[in-house]
Length: 424
Ligand SMILES: [Mn+2]
Image (cartoon, rainbow, N blue to C red):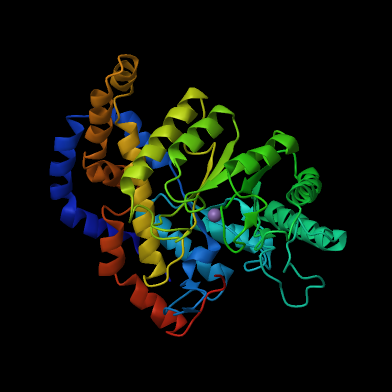
């Protein structure tokens, strides 16, 4: 599908006056607006290749229409998102669902859309056709060394694919764990997992990072071998300075204080990656910001504060990715909503009066501290986000543009109404 940039420009022109009125009002109340606009323009969130198709639950999957049928079409879809919002300039591949056939061609295609490849993701949570040893009882933790070796070899193969497309990090999420008391020796499971991760770590190129993603439960329901940030940090510390913890918002027990986790991991220099989604109960993988946008804002506040304290670049020193599943919405519309929610929370965190907050804290003025936070949170920063997007050549309102330019209808026409993307 070819995207006519003029059509986006025409839409923007039709709405520019209303936008400028709203932006004018907002910009009067923000001091460092140029700095904020630049940060918003730089900030990019990777789209995972598995999020472009309709997801499902263990009860079933209701495929949509016009879904991408191969990696090239997935890249095309992320290119479309990026053209609209100018904030989705990266794609994260899952191996083996999206093995690049011709790495150079795939890399070139991505470059045409202004996309780079973010972390590559391995998969030992399911058996692949023809696979010799099963991961039914775990992969990197498995009691049998031959199974562990197979899982290690898979991860090293994923690194090789990553090198070919210019990726610089590997995310390892393990389904490993146990579903019943007595099933595993926790200590031995940890030691086996660590030993396996060490072998993978030693295969990393010099400039690469390894992200150890944790999850509290599911698919195992008694113990997970990387179950929380403490365990992930243990692995990362033992592995070395190229290993980091990865926080996925949906991978905590209910009511966990994720903002505090993020703060301490950054303090330790061990936060490497971040997966966005939202949830009400567990790993619900819902649209970012649809349930608890205030928590997202509080997390961003700690991300920004922790990165600033270390002199880190917001846009590039952490790997930012959406990790959500779209069961009832059009995946592309859902992703546009998610990116917008992230940009809004980021913008809100940037307008917090950090000096006043510090003073309030030092004076134990709890009321004032809350007022400062909520003043930023209750500011409608959407014109600010839109202004940054406009400067980068995107659409003032990406979702409205997606609908009025009938992108979904065009994709269905091209790909058919019964397509199904590889993935969840
Ligand atoms: Mn994740």
